[in-house]
Length: 173
Image 1 (cartoon, rainbow, N blue to C red):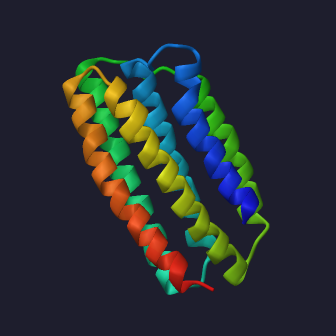
Image 2: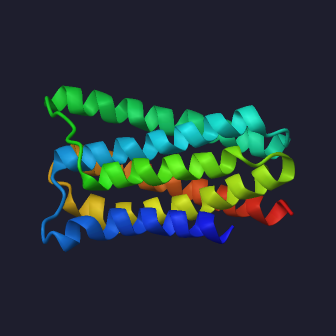
Image 3: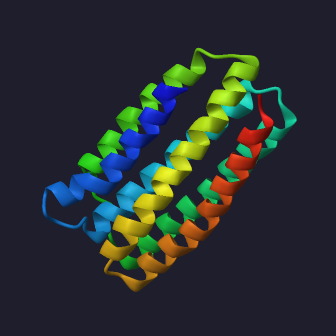
């Protein structure tokens, strides 16, 4: 469990400090890539949960994560296409992907209730981290009003995900 929380903390650090350390806010193309990457990470985690879990509440939660994050990513892709912006890969996106791959591997080694508990705890920590990064780094750094609006809409939705994950975590023993 500590390893999963540390993984999510690493993600928060990646989102929150990598750009600050470089004394430069992420650009809109970088923000678009970071946001899409973060959403895709949760889609992939949900797909893993749908394959591994037998718990109806966890399955329903994973379906919600998959549906909502795909929808936000589809909106993001439509927006960058409309704006004729090419999302730009960057160190933050890369570190998110690397850490997510490690977490998926850790979760893949678990089964049954151990998987369910670890998946949900990771979702709590991940949403806390992503929500914090959205509020403190990505939204304030976004220059385009439509991008900023999409990020704000995402933050509202992802706060609901965090609350749902926290509730589910309190139920899973």
